[in-house]
Image 1 (cartoon, rainbow, N blue to C red):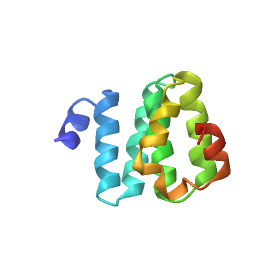
Image 2 (image 1 turned 60 degrees about the vertical axis):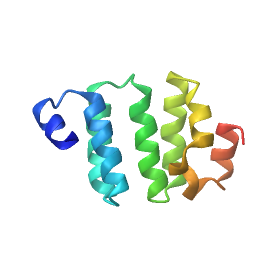
Image 3 (image 1 turned 45 degrees about the horizontal axis):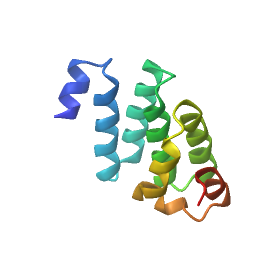
Length: 105
């Protein structure tokens, strides 16, 4: 469904992000990254795109890149800091001191 929506309306950011999340759940992280980057290219001021890209980096264990993307997301929308505390997508890097400091664990 999301794949069809993203193909029909490639400039729809939320379709790209939703498709990326589906790819993450299917353990196809590189496909997820493609969708998250496509969403980000559409609007560099849309915080959820940075957040989603951070979730990709967390999934592949790249804590430094995840934190970098989260910093961008939080600078645009500070409430994202609360999302990180609850989101299981960040579990693989939850022990990272930079993530803990950023999210205020």
